[in-house]
Length: 110
Image 1: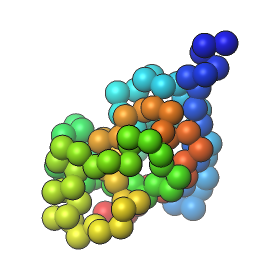
Image 2 (image 1 turned 120 degrees about the horizontal axis):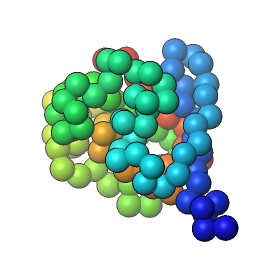
Image 3 (image 1 turned 90 degrees about the vertical axis):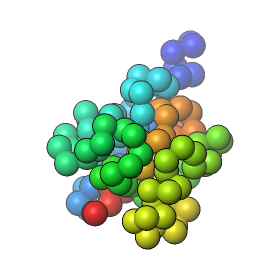
């Protein structure tokens, strides 16, 4: 029963295609790595998850918990790119936690 508690799912939209992704809390280090692996996004995350290149920008709806807070390099990088919408995030800065469960994530164009 403990494993079911750690299972989560969310919807990803990329090029008008919707896909439900199921994973487990902590299965991936961050959302960027999960999306690269499950969605085969070659162009995604050029800086390797440092929060500096903004090549892993997503729009996320329904995020909850501590994941709402933008920390580390994320606010500065998003500001430099002109992103002011609170739902625009760097996927490399989001950990794979229960906060992602039920969210809708849209892969954005640079």
